[in-house]
Amino acid sequence: MENENITPKKKKKILPVILITIILITVFFGINKYNYALHHVDTDDAQIDGDISPVYSRVAGYVSAVNFEDNQKINKGDTLITIDIRDLQIKQEMAEAALASAQANLNVAQAAINTAKGSAAVANTGIESAKVRVWKANQDYNRFSQLMNQDATTKQKFDAAKAEKDGAEASLNTAKSQFSVANNQVSAAKDQLVVAQAQIKQRNTEVDFAKLQITYSYVTAPASGTVSKKNVQNGQLINVGSPLCVVVSSDDNYVIANFKETQLEKMKEGQDVKIIADAFPDTEFSGKVYHISAATGAKFSILPPDNATGNFVKVIQRVPVKIKIDQKNNSSKLLRPGMSVKVSVQVD
Image 1 (cartoon, rainbow, N blue to C red):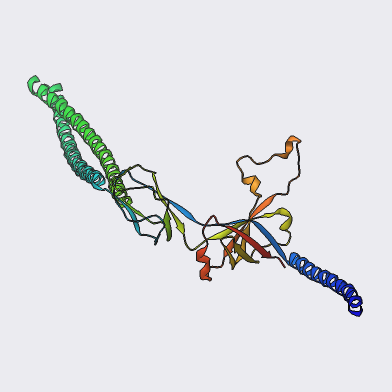
Image 2: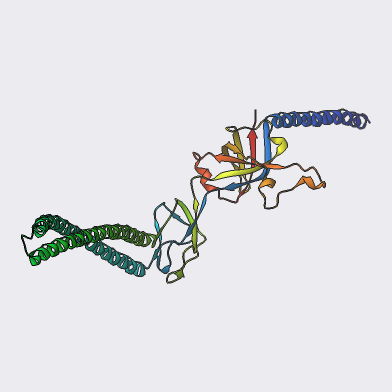
């Protein structure tokens, strides 16, 4: 009978202890949660992002070699694809032939200038000679005119002196015309020289372009990382701008976290961040706030909301925040662009 009376009493004492314990645990976790919320801002609207470099063809041709497989590790500058260069080599040879022709035209133009200058010099000498002849003819004409007035010479000699004078003056005019023509030929030859020089510059550019096109036949990796999304095979005819593959950088992965605008009051660049990836829930990654977007995500959408229509409904907007992942931890290599993560920013 005594044992039966003691048991209910013990139960009455244990029940308050349990309730008090539960209350204390609840208060303890509540206080911890409150303190954590004062100093941290969390979101699960976040994912890993990274630099993904598309690889395109810069020349058209047939693929002669593909030197990679999907999801293969590569280094910057590695040759991924080789394109048959025979067509490009022919174009280079054609450009070099055109350059040789332009250089020959330049030599012809230079020779034409020299010839025209020689003709101008001869014409100038002819002018001087004609001037001397005109001077002598005028002297003779004047003398015979005086003698004719004194009837001291014959009409025949006077006419001969006059004809010589007229012929000398005509020769002088002809020499001047020849000199003018020769000068015009010099100017024209110089213009041809300028044209020839411009053609050489153009042909040189075409040769350089042809050589550059040949270098494009070797498609190299724009960055170190993992090559993926292979879209090319041996023997395939590709055109300029054809997508060949993508290279996912292995060094600069980061997190884009979309925080509510009400969470940004104490957030600033350089604050520490804890990152938990859904794929690796037992691994904690670290990082820092790199920068906060200049506008909300909605403003960057194709059709941003316009509240000027009168149909205003207040919705808390989200602002993208870029978080740099600490690359010193080797486990950060496990992260892949597109993975979902949870982030916690220590704001105080």
